[in-house]
Image 1: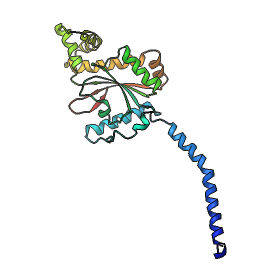
Image 2 (image 1 turned 180 degrees about the vertical axis):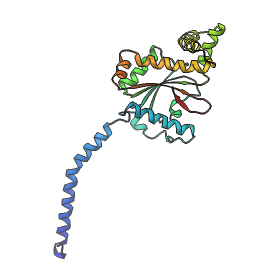
Image 3 (image 1 turned 60 degrees about the horizontal axis):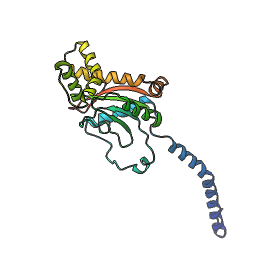
Image 4 (image 1 turned 60 degrees about the vertical axis):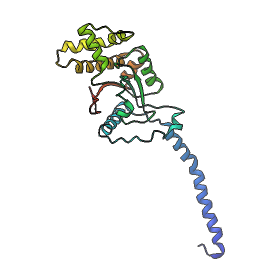
Length: 237
């Protein structure tokens, strides 16, 4: 009973007990905080990463993005990056994977080249995203009305001559155009775009030693997708 003469003593004793408990709990809470902080955002399954992207694209296409503050987390990102996906995308200025998936800075590791094909430099960059940054998902992202694919079609159909290094770009896309032509489907451009994504996704998935091993061990999933310029929607293929 904390009667008047001893009230101050009882209060102090109670405070001491609470303080002691806090001292005991503090190291445990600190360890929990460190454990949680040590788990990066990309320590998730490939399927979870893909769901996050497609959910984000649904928000983007509906014009309801959730990523608005691009300065948040800037100090932490200066120290490290933990992307959830490595994307091989076309360099087309109308295609912005971070926006299209409604992701923030540090979430998407993007390699861009006109025609979204995998050359040696692109492969090395994707390997870096997987091996060093631990991205659990790899995506080849094409888009509708791709000018690079259309140029490859015109060269093959009309023997058009292109200047500079553009013939090398066409040569990289040529197998996709030929694959689409072999299927005999009506819209050659649309189908060549799809075939280009499929061929390059297959190339990434089977490239030795880094990507093929990661895919075989289930550490990554390699997928292909096409971004529709008109609607903003992304469709897996």
